[in-house]
Length: 89
Image 1 (tube, rainbow, N blue to C red):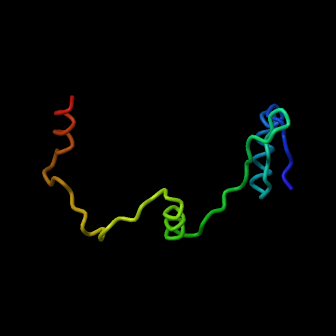
Image 2 (image 1 turned 90 degrees about the vertical axis):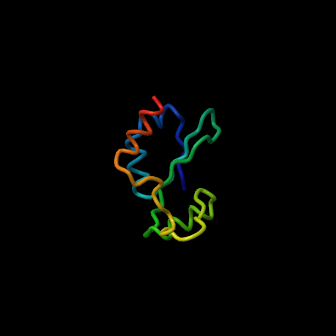
């Protein structure tokens, strides 16, 4: 069960609370008796495809249409970035 800490106590014991979170506990922070935040451990996903799938489900990333091989650079001349930046100055 998560223990609730008032804001002033959470500020004073932040390092201790973070150590507790590292051990897998959840910490709740309250202001005037009302819960305002919950600090919990991050559940790491083991591999990149799983993380990308989760981000796609959450709507954070959108899968590209087509293959990555279809992406080509716009300019192949050396110094294109320098010319672009000088033109914008």
